[in-house]
Image 1 (cartoon, helix red, strand yellow):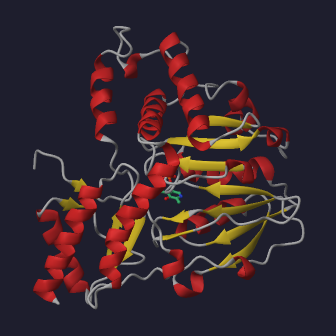
Image 2 (tube, rainbow, N blue to C red):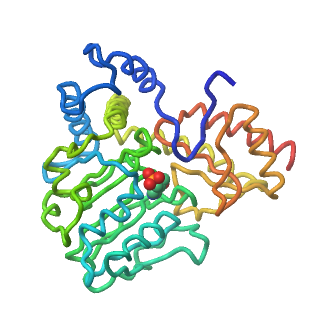
Length: 362
Ligand SMILES: *Cc1c(COP(=O)(O)O)cnc(C)c1O
């Protein structure tokens, strides 16, 4: 298959066509420097400008104030799982974690290496099919911070509003799979992080937005590469940074701004997801395991009546250019990941296929 397909993959995921085409040209010659983007010095003028613009556009896009640092780091969200507690969680202190899925569990596991973890709520009892309501959350006495996963990529659930940590605690968010898919109140958070490969760019590059006053709160001696304060001071370039990743993320920020920013994205994402959820709600054939008040606009998880039919669904869809629909093995069934860069046309094509498949097998 030589032409591009509708790629519903959960991550690495589809990127905006305009960004990919621009990157193709910039691989050869970036900014009329005669040097391609992969060959640029990370201390040179082209990369200086690129980092400065990516940071400024991030702030513009999400309304990030001067009280925050924007960092482009490495190692993916999984590195933030340990980097955050290593820096902030003292051995005798407690952090509260909201357990809403596999990624939350991994974050909890890493935090336990450094201090005490209080699981303030969990939806594991129902295979993570819902987001606990605020009155179901039991915070500990004096947590250093509260950590949540805003969108649960595997289970297809998403916080509709950010939790409210108890006084004195700041809020940390793993925003990997819904970052900049809707407006975000950065000022409500102490630290936000996202692996880039869902909504922003290439895997490995990691966006971290953190409140500057937290930089002074490192609780233990750490290697330089784990020091947020040092990385902030060095403008994310303590060592050779993932320049290409930051380049793509910067282009995606510009693409988002040109499309009307996060408010416009929220509207488009809601429209896309509604197409798919409407099929689930009007069908006796498909079923969505996520509780309706907890549904994700980024990952639409659904089942067919039997595993055999699900296999058939994924295979037949693939033949029609609808690719990456197999659900995560811990949930089964299907999952349509429809991040910012995924088109409405792709959702419409899936709806048509779903209705046709139901008509043939229902
Ligand atoms: C994909 C994902 C991760 C893992 O990201 P890596 O960059 O592979 O470490 C963590 N959290 C969430 C919510 C994710 O969707």
